[in-house]
Image (cartoon, rainbow, N blue to C red):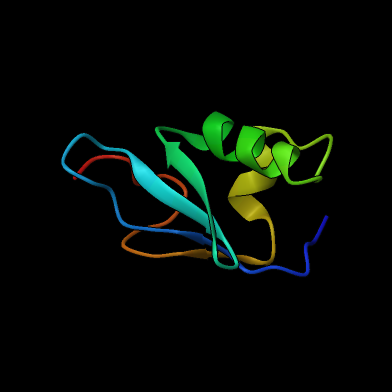
Length: 71
């Protein structure tokens, strides 16, 4: 599944949360892949599992990949 908007997952904050943006829209703070999948569902990408998010094209992981949740 792909989206026309670039999804950016920012580096982990002090508490391990990562900011998630779609284009210029802030989607929320994610504390794991399940949170990212939920945010993407809310913008219309239905049926995503956390494993889908980890390998999905169109996501730019900054400060570590989908396995990096600790500062």
